[in-house]
Image 1: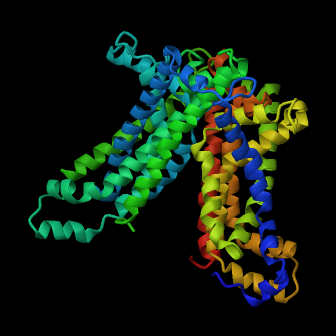
Image 2: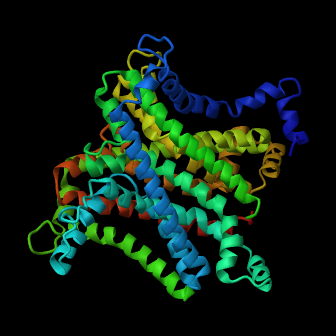
Image 3: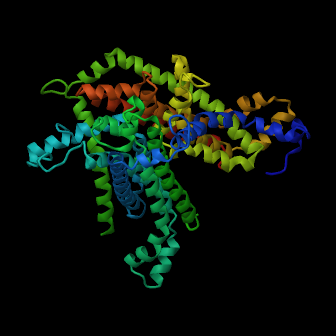
Length: 296
Length: 260
């Protein structure tokens, strides 16, 4: 691929080949710089600036006030809980379909549905859950009138930590199914046979062979799900208004009306979000590279 | 024993995913006391704000798709043909919108392109529309680039280009008469996904103050009871439709192109 073909090479000419080549990717690079890289850099740099442009660490230090810290903490907890549960449930469903001996006709519709559901985030998702688990929701009313369980008196509220986590699971589980199914497919039949010839029980095979091989994929996908939930704004706002103090909602309010009274603190808040999702994604990429060693 | 486990996991999943969909559909039909009716839908569809915001979002989606195709297809083609060493780098850039939350990107836009900046895009309505379109193109970049690049992989870009060149075709002709038709199916699946993303997008449109469908849904959700559920059903139908079309065209692809 490195050698130029004669026809294509002649067209460009020998002398101006190098710079002219870059013209082909110039529009994309300009677009990416203006509308992806520069805006992000503006935020990152702004996080370390005073309002008149000097360098400061004060904005970052200001993040460590109780209200902002608690917003980050709740966000991280919700993202972690929904990532962990999404991972477990998604894995169970994917494993059930791939390895559980279910009819093979289930697989294709399940993956299609996962494709749809993992994109069904945002405002409509919040409405769907309000209509289901909200105060007059379908399930709430059914449980109260038919079975006699009052969710509210049990302390459940859709506008809460668990409410949001359960709602996020609606796009987390399908995403997990989409990503982990190929990894489970990659478990070779020979490994299982080899293990059982050596006298391993099913549990031993899973504990000593399959699970260690899948572990990087599982952890990596979990990091991805975490970042996915951490950046979700629309679902949270449509569901809770601004009653729940999580980072995306706080940042949204800040951009809308400068509620913190200091635009550079807003930058720092946004920088914190990039920082958290960045770490999660770096983890994902690293673990994915590790898992590909086995699951090729 | 294993089967019971598997069925259990599957049933749990089915129940979890079916209930909210049933709940939302059920709720959307209950506007009239004591009986099921399509009143909420009628009310939503007759609302001029619905028509305006929906038209706005559909227009934005179509413009974004055209822009995305013009941006991504030549780039992916050129990188495959002439600058393969650049591929990992370009791919990394296209994946960045998955890492950087949309709310952060739009925050950067507002600060970078406000009325007192060197490129005051938010100063006029047209400018803001264009900025929002760029934002949508950025959000759909990971999906669009992936789709197009996969499509290019399944055709022989180099031979097609050389054949066209030796017959005297210009670069524009090569791109739009030869390459694009060959990867049209992949481009379409990227386009449908872009459509689904743009139609429901909330954050960017709300923060740039544009009358899009997403913010309208949110506003209605804060003020009404039954209409939001009807809107959610409609939105789910649109997402489902787009993804269904992707399935359809990708099945079509297998018969028209040689396997990768």
